[in-house]
Length: 430
Image (cartoon, rainbow, N blue to C red; front, side):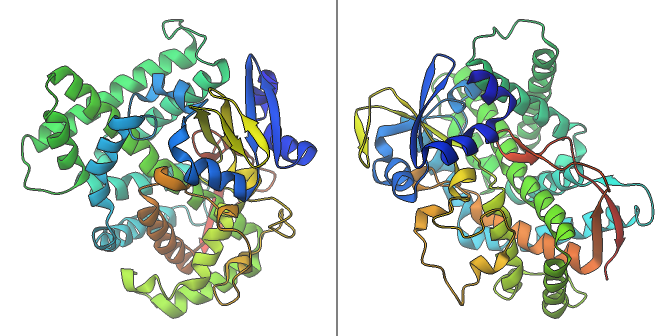
């Protein structure tokens, strides 16, 4: 089973849900995974009894690559990190970032227009550039585009994190495998970028963005070395998680819109009616209802967080199933979002599932694209606003078409990204 997980992680989860139903024990190497695929079970593990479940297989091993940032930390350290960063994601502060998103979206469209009638452009790379631009200006008051190769560096770090999962951290980091060499170089590059960001900010504390909050928080550590390590870990994690998931969602959206021209035309009609030819603002979000429905359906089919691994601290019962202390427990939004009991025709792309005028009678935890419970994604509102405004602008102004013959397949890394990029040709909107 370990070889299957390495080769086809989504296939393993999908087969488990198909063959064993809502609960199963899976052998993965020397590990046994307790796999749960029902909204009631997800609610129990992620929310009702969340205190009994720490981050599990995968994220524990990813810590060797990512350090102790918000994604991988636990206990008091995690609570401290969440308390520090949470105020920067309050609704009013996120709403104030709409102009930043609109400006970055306009720059993206200008870049893409240069490809009209020309060779394909890698949409994943372009969406990564966009989301890094938004993240830098919105949360760090910095131009991340000034740091060349940052997207590739994050790719190497994420590859190493998944390698740690596949090998269960059995391979020493000093072994000179090509991916480990790339990772060490990438990690040094990212730490250098963090040091430069901090040096430019200096000791200024009169700003209330994420960077300033982290500088103040980590400076309070009694051991300066611990403070520097914490700051680097938290910023690297924030930069990775803050851009990767939204870039993946935008890429999947453009691909699915190309495959479903009726949906694309309907979405464009809404964007033209709501926005006209101006830049969008936060007030437009409530009017872009169909755009929101499309994005919600994209995240149903390709949830940015495809796996939620946990480790049971004490014995528990999930439904009728006993979970022993120390057990590795997994909930997969990818399979949960395709559960046929809650999603009719789950393989079909149907944005109307999320029409607020006709709400479906499905359990709350049948749909968890941003996770659930105390570790619900802190940046979900920023990511959703960014995706909504940018997609509306893109579809209004341009039509992107997947290169014929290019196989588009999901790659389940820390987020569910498009494997090998997404080449698309650029055309005027029609």
